[in-house]
Amino acid sequence: MSDFGPLKLHVPEPVGRPGDEPDFSYIDIPEAGSVRMPAVDADAKDMRDLAYTMIRVLDDNGEPVGDWAKYVDDEMAMKGLRDMLKVRAFDARMFMSQRQGKTSFYIQCTGEEAIACAHQMALEKGDMNFPTYRQQGLLISQDFPMVDMMCQIFSNEKDMLKGRQLPIMYTSKEYGFFSISGNLGTQYIQAVGWAMASAIKGDTKIASGWIGDGSTAESDFHASLVFASVYKAPVILNVVNNQWAISSFQGIAGGQQSTFASRGHGFGIPSLRVDGNDYFAVYAASRWAAERARRNLGPTLIEWVTYRAGGHSTSDDPSKYRPKGEAEAWPLGDPVERLKGYLVKKGLWSDERHEQMVAEIEQEVLDAAKEAESHGTLHSGPKPSTRDMFEGVFKEMPRHLREQRQKLGV
Ligand SMILES: Cc1ncc(C[n+]2csc(CCOP(=O)(O)OP(=O)(O)O)c2C)c(N)n1
Image (cartoon, rainbow, N blue to C red; front, side, top):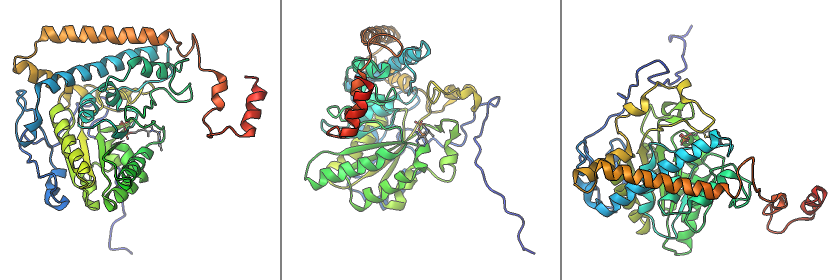
């Protein structure tokens, strides 16, 4: 007989389910400004604490405080506000287009707008992002034409991918936006490889890889950290912890045992944990990591703490698995409201001007949607040519594909 009782499998459960009150007591939130900024060439071992706390710049009164507030800039704040509002309006319009049957699918990033928008500001032309499907802000903050994004979403005659990809899987080499793939995590290791190539060539460009909390459970995440660390690849390793992976809460991906930022330390990678709803904190941490990479000091892992305010996608209904009102109860607030609060407090902005800007942006998005729709939508108007279906499989079209195309008579 065993001296021990029967074993029991531990299966993490979220704090709340539908019908429960939202409860975020599991998240410790330090005061804004309380976390130090280490020197950019500091050793990973001398900043372990930064993986277990949270870098925050904007306090509850909309004041930027502490070491990480050194990059606060009013012009950037105005741009940030506009960019985030654009992303939000774009998401709302495309969500509606899906409900109207104009596209088969859409993914919003509501509540997470600050992360991609502010991060992009820390990058330079020629740097390459390896995004997931939830970083549309990387494109929108660079004024990538919204019409082109919409044409891809509608799979119409002007679709940049000629109808070959699921909506929202954009690509743009020119804007440093690597082609999105449906297979979670694959882009993370590719980001590291791209960064290694930049170093091998003696280039000055850096890469930025993106992954969600759920996808850190993929083995590609772990392989990425090994390669990034061993070769000191000039890469920023972003983990967007929005608390949910469809219906799985972050605890099931390992978030209950430790922070996602702390994963970096097992690999000797400097790691920061940052308030992802604080535009200034996102920018400052991104700048810090970008500078490390550019100075050839190697990778930085950053966990962005945020909350997925909307459903996972247009195919998802979060009321089936999480408490109602969680987004409103999220203790780090809304990124748009927080940045707006800063500008209002400084006397640079007002509710009236804000409303006016929202209306202008909605009109801009509506105009773009009308133009995109004139090139076709899912079930009406012009489509990409069926002939194009056979292009791009290989560099040169092999005989068997030419034969298949012939059989189709296109
Ligand atoms: C290899 C792989 N496994 C599963 C899926 C299905 N899938 C698509 S999104 C998703 C959840 C990802 O969650 P997370 O990484 O937290 O990112 P988030 O959607 O929250 O931004 C899953 C399981 C997939 N696309 N690829």
